[in-house]
Every structure is written in structure tokens, then in C-alpha cells.
Length: 462
Picture 1 (cartoon, rainbow, N blue to C red):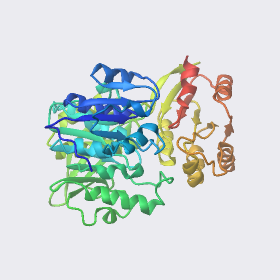
Picture 2 (cartoon, rainbow, N blue to C red; picture 1 turned 90 degrees about the vertical axis):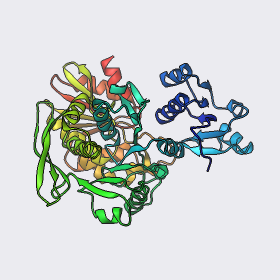
Picture 3 (cartoon, one colour; picture 1 turned 180 degrees about the vertical axis):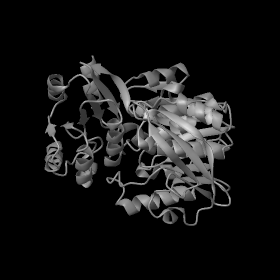
Picture 4 (cartoon, rainbow, N blue to C red; picture 1 turned 120 degrees about the vertical axis):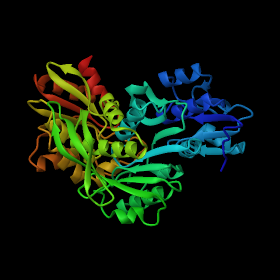
């Protein structure tokens, strides 16, 4: 594998440089003196930022975009072998790295690195840890898989030895990372277009834990089933959080008028007794975010950060984009945008919504990929049935072409079998018309999914 050398910056070309993660890595390398070029299908604010920092970017993607003298080409899992630039790089025998491999090599440049993994909550927990480190004045470099308002984007270039990154399991990309500290939030069945089953996913997380550097730490949710199977044979110190008996346990949990949690965190001592580490309050709703905060506090405590700075950091964090993000009022109904696209995430978000002031909870949901919808159909129906009214959009195919005989209307039928109300419309315009006719003052409308369903809320509010 090609190895970049920060002592001898080279020329790097990114296929699909405008992606949220790719653009962040390109910014890190530009700061370190690398010559960066790239391409994408269209312009964006992120691309204009890269151009302002010295990157040469072309549209659309074509073979001649790769400059002469390019030392290495970087690509993502979304790039197929028939991509003209991918094919050209292969023909010209230019070394190639995946986005994850490059992230791993960048992480190796930082002595103190934290990688946050898990099927759900990665972006939020990475953001919490980042805000805590910022409040502590530790000047971290940050790579997060969403827009974090506190840093004005998805990347922050710090001057310290601290690097905080989100670690995604899809296509085993997190196996390219070798962090000093790793966090595993949860392990659920997902991405079944790549993984065979839950056991395959668990094996992948075990391999991720094996990659932790010597002398490092694994912070893992104590409620994960059969933790020894994940941790067997790893070199890292194992620290648990969350459930009773863990090393860090949240207790005395309460919620304010918008469902944001406050809690005490207990820390297990060497003799097995517990000591109160501190009391903490969040600005974002949900029981799941109390758990995410416990993981973030554990990471901060193990990094030697004072609890006063931890409290400040958690209060500083007001949520990443598309994570229970309040967008505005339509006819007195609160419109909230949320990225949830897995049953566990949907359930957590709807439970959080129950704490939020509302007359009726509406959930406008766009399923994400046919594979996930078919594999988890009963779980989707059960989670969505928690809403008072469910409005379904067509399945967002993403990278898939085979519909597997599944549709949103199939999901509607499963929800109705559970006695809940659900309707399906094939177009966003029909959904918006239905909401205009039926939303009432005091209602809470969650626009939910990982695709382009965000447009529904935007159109209503415009």
C-alpha cells in the first residue's frame, strides 16, 4: 500500500473530492503542504472552500482530470471501477488509496487519536467529544461525518497532537484505522448489502478493536451483548460504560421541557465501589444521547480533562445537523429534521420526541435502500408505529438498483397491521399537500431519513 509521508508532501488526486469526508481529508493535507487536485459531479460550498485553500478541482469526472505527476489517487466506496478517473489511474499504474486508508494514515500522524465507532450515534458522540476537547483548550483536529456548527463544518484543523474522528463500519472502512482510543457505541444489524449478518458485523467490530494501538483503550457500551466476543485477545485496556456494573454509569436521569437529559455519572473505583464523577446537562433530547454523553465523558476523563471543562463542552454542543434539528414552525407545528434511517435510530428519536411538547407526533419517513428495508421490515414497522401519524415516501435507492420486491407501500401495510396510522405517497409534492391539509398548531412533525426527504420540511417552511 502507498504510504504518504508528512515530511515529504506529495501530489494527491481525489475522485469525488466534494464529499463531506473526502473534502475534510483534503483540507488536512492542504494545510500540511500537499498538492491537492480533485474532481466531482458538481460545485458546492465545500469545493469552493477547497479551491480557496489551493486545490485544483475539475467538473465533471473524466480521465484527463488526473494531473501528470500525480503520486497517488484517493477514492471512496461510491466510486465504481468503470468510473473514468478510476480506470485512468489503473491504466497509468498510479498508486491508489481508499478514503478510509488515507484517513488511517492521517490518524497515524497524531500521537493522541480517538476513533468513534458504532452502528448508531457516531456523529453525535464524535461531536460531543470534540466540543469537550475544544472547551478544554486542547486544539484538536476533528473529522466528523456531519456538519458541526461549533466548528463551522465537518473538519477542524488543530495544531495539537489530538485527532478525533468518526469511524464507519460500512465496507469495513474502519479497519484501516489504528487509534490510541476507540469507542464502540453499539452493534446492530445494518448495511446488510455488504455484511452477511449480525455475526459478520460483530466479527468486523472485533477486528476494529484489535487495531487499537499498544497501550491504548477501548471504551465500549456495557449493554452490548456478549462483550467478551468483541474484546477477546485485544491488547487494549477495556473500559465499559452505560449499564449497571459498568465502569461509568449514568444515574438520576431526568428530562427538561424539550426532552434534554440531566444526570449524574458514577465511576467505578479499584475496590469496586462507585464515586460520583459529576452532574451533567445536555441541550439535546433523548435517552440515547445520555448514553452517548456517558461515552464522551469517559473518553474525556481518560484523557485527563477536568469535569468542569466536560460540563462546558456538553452545554456547548447543540446537536449536529440532521440530528433532531429543529428547523422552524409551519402553521404552529414544529418541523424537526432527523437522519434516522435504522429501526433502532427511529425508535430512539421517537422516544425522544415523546418528551418534546406536542399534540400529535407526525413522522414523515423515507426508507433508505431496498436491502435494509426488506431485511428489517418488522422492526421498521414496530418503531414507526410509535408515532401518531406516519407518512411514507418512496424508498431511497442510494447505490442499489434491484428493488427486491419491496416498497414503501409494503411497509405501510405492516404498520397498519400493528394498529397504527400510516399513509404512502409516491411524490414529495403529494406528501407536502397532505401535511398542509392536516398539520395543526402544536403538532410535532419529524422529517426522517438519510436520503433527500429533507426537501419536504424545506418546502413547507419556504
